[in-house]
Length: 232
Image (cartoon, rainbow, N blue to C red; front, side, top):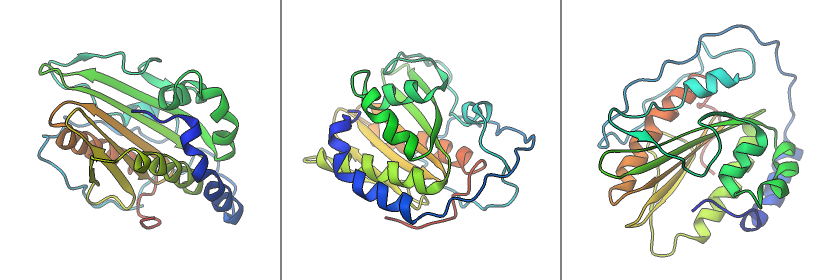
């Protein structure tokens, strides 16, 4: 259910306004920082994101290694799944946009996403023993303003497709939006300057999406300040 670039046109003016109004500060010089250690995949009944603080955050831009380390690990017994193509782990800008929008639409989105500050991405996909398929993608942006603009565009596209679907959010996250159907679900979460997108194909997709997003959100909030801003 990933979006076509054409469905994001309604959010482009808002994204431009957000960028124009933003005062972009100079990024500090990166310093070596430990990467987050992924924990065991949480149970599907876990649906509340734990409080996070801005203390002890890395002082430089998020590195590719840190982004990959923040991905939820493949659960025990699950096997790798091709998802929407591309490598498992770090993604270039073009690879990330191909996963999000498809190979035909990715080139059209590249210039706009670079303007929003897109730096790189990461992904992991797996299929569990019961047949549930999970795709997790991260989009790393220069600052929260760009990530929020990208979030609002995809959120608007999801809202266009939510007829007959169940809307849901990730409790504890300031900005999140999900839609669930009998066949699957998608959950979009803003985590500071990182954009988290979870897609699940299974009958219990909403519970699984929340559980996976909960862990990923916690990891990302150890890399970027998730306490800033408010709901859209």
